[in-house]
Length: 101
Image (cartoon, rainbow, N blue to C red; front, side, top):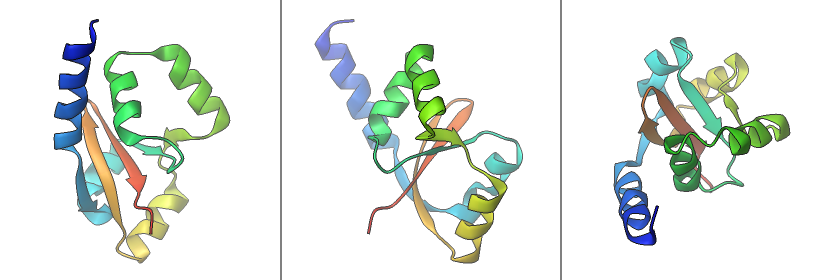
């Protein structure tokens, strides 16, 4: 893939990110489609890698715990404080990331 289409895709994904209250994402969590992305990673880059189906990268992220399904405990904590998260859809998944203070 040449750089220009990649940058266009990056820009498109960036424009599709949004701040959203966690409570609005409960149906995605309930269906198992909510994926937490550590704040140490670039949410857009993770979305790009997911779009590219980069299994090797995702296996590494999963093993190190910087990417994974939102746990029941995390979901409850976010709900309790009415947390706002960054989110982007890479169908069928929704990637969520805590907003850095």
